[in-house]
Image (cartoon, rainbow, N blue to C red):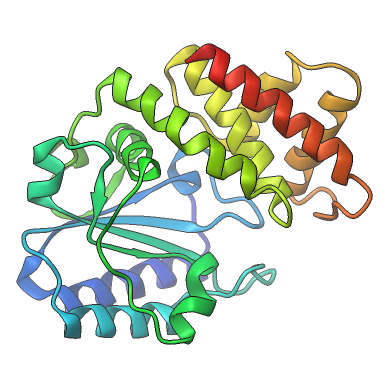
Length: 258
């Protein structure tokens, strides 16, 4: 795992915020996502997962949210600036219970910033996406604090992974407009996982999927891959129809592979 001095400082500062806000309740904190699966790309978030012994109080939620709003870079991340943070906190008892969909105690992400700045507070929530986060993090997470990830993060059965992808698919497709690059690359990664059972970086999954596409579909996904890698501008103003057709096709491939 390679990080710049600025990214290392941002990670350490985030861990400091978790310690200050959560105190003795914090029993594990882990890096996961792009940083550990293939390295940060120009618009990759820094993804952190934390495990707590007990639920968060109202004051802990407010303190943690205030700290993350200050520390997280706004989307889109400026070159050389602070990265967008994604922080998900789970209770140990929820992880051990194996319930589906997984329950998160607290979620912070830049896509939620407007709501947070308008006064909303992160509250417990269940979502199939959290089951996928746990499944991927258990295999790849790097501890910042606490024991190895597989000691706290539950093993998500393959059937639950498939169910989570199936359940997450409609909302993912509905969110295409305005988030084309991320949605198309997430669909490519889901397609790859559905076929292989493995989790890989988005650009790696895109390369795998491009080899299984042709013509305009392959070109559109390659546009998303190259934008993710910072090789071209992330501009979809002239590719609305192509992105929609590709998303529908890959959605069908994912559903048919589950």
